[in-house]
Amino acid sequence: MKILGSRVGLQLFQADERITNSQFSQFDSKELSAVYLPDTMAALLDVKPFEVGQFVEDDNRGAISPSPVATIDGLDFHLSVKGIGSTTAPFSYQLLDREYLSSLVGDLKLRSRIRESGSGVSRFITGELWLRGSPYGGQGVEHASTALRVSEMADMTSINGFRIAPVIRVVYLPEEVERAAKSIYWYRRFNGRIVQELRLVPSNIRVYFHSGSVMGRHMKRVFDMFVIDSNEKAYEFEMNFIRSCISLLTLFPRTMRLREDGRYSGLDFNDVWLDKDAVLAPDGTVFFVDLEGIEERVVDEKMVADKIEEQLHRSLYEFMFAYEQIENERASRFGPAGDRRMQFEMLVREAVKDDRFIDLTSEGGSLKLIIKNKLDEQKLNKSFSVVDRDVG
Image (tube, rainbow, N blue to C red):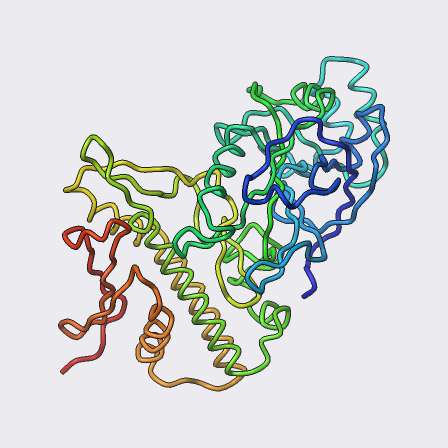
């Protein structure tokens, strides 16, 4: 599979400080113990990189390796680096050119180094406080630690069926680069430690935006990229997509536990979304990639059903939007399947048949999901209509 997108060169420097995902401690190499800096940030160091690598842009502040670095459960995964710097200003469409950025800096020596930091694309990690816990263009240690903690809950890439792109290591920026980055800010300075997340991802294809190739606008390209060249492959792709999305829609009950105080907790999404914070594997499986916004939510027993339903509806539209794009492209290439609701019901039935958290039932002309929970408490099961049939 060829990773599509603009190329970006990154210089590799030894990371003196790092935190490793315990499940991936056997994966060790100099590439996994490195900080990845664009030319403009590398120019602020007085040491030479031990390697220069070619990557593909991914999202505003990330990059992905063009070739796979690991295979897990039969799927190839690429190295993703989150926090390599941005090319545009946070509060306008202005490019982060060297002259503009240097005007934000009071230190004359640093101002001169920024102006003279190479001649290629200007990409910078800055010290502007962004998204509460991260600097603009970079990543904060608090957010990265959350992503690492969620990654360590998984069985490699799965939390009870909810698929994740795991963070395998968090690396800290060199101190001199961090100091320089914090000197570049517009209004509010980020005061925490600046790090990068090294992650494993199956692709850089997002559902709707934050990528050069998205399902919402480039489904033909996605089919070609993933070599979906038969109706059978298209149906398998759709089933994997539906299976993984239903797991995502039901994350809270899949991770639910009873606390000592009698309340219930489970994982929920905060400021992260299916449309921009998940990527698509070549087999159709959705992997959630931006794990910093996955948090434990605590509710009273009487609110469990409401929390499950709220989580379902939170990403339901994005799920159905993306499914429509896949099915429309399948139909245009290999022929229509007939009634859309019957087609969707057939795929749902096949997708969840081995899911221990989902049962199906027909009730009042509807196909309903019976959503079970990790505690196997039937009183906390939730019924949800996934498709309404024609009746009469």
